[in-house]
Length: 313
Image 1 (tube, rainbow, N blue to C red):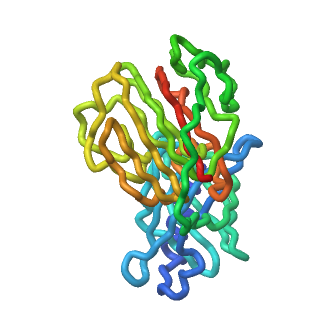
Image 2: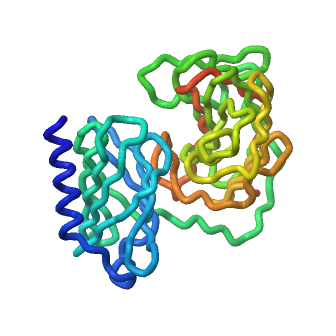
Image 3: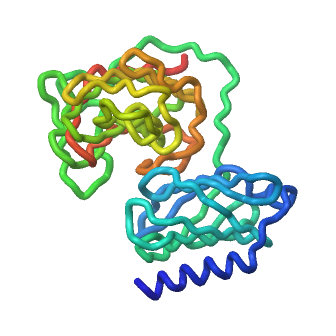
């Protein structure tokens, strides 16, 4: 581990010495948002990168790893197609994460040395803008939960056994276990859903399986992108409207392209804001594709009810 950490720090030093920031016109090929796929232990995991200019020549950005929230990048180095940056650890490991890639033919590929010292191959493409210009005519609401069975839903692949069950008309995850996704996939939609969690618990509602709306015991706290009603790591509610734990919390969520509006407990806390990219724990990074509704069950106990959706006609 120490050897890998030393190598990572050496890469950083080399990057600082040799990869000087470019002028804006030369950096244009890298600027923007990138949907990444990372290979780990024979499986593919989603990741995301944003690179932008600070002033006229310094490149900065944000990075979403396999897990956790979007993290700022203080400086991105780019020279002759080589991309290089490092960021401190977040939830996993104790080392700096180091990213080194090559940009060629509108594709990024390379190696990530993660905070645990593992070398992981990645590849990526530009994220779609998902712009919608036409007005939306919504269908009538239809139920995604019949109050009796797990029809419409299935466990998202996990080594754990499925803990979800139906009790008294509620969709219940009594303990930490697997996540649950809809059989059906969606593009744009309006979603009504109600959640209830015990004190200190944590869950989430993933839109298209990629963008987490945080469901967490946050009563009495200041608003934050990683607390109740936020789009995890990206969008902060304009006020904290969470009720105390063991109360039913009501959400009305509209997603059109990348634009999201979230009404929680009767108040609009995020209005028509752009979600920059996938959040940690997303099912994949294929942002241009439809995706399911995912209910997070791998963090703590939670209950849901009255799940209804409207889709474009």
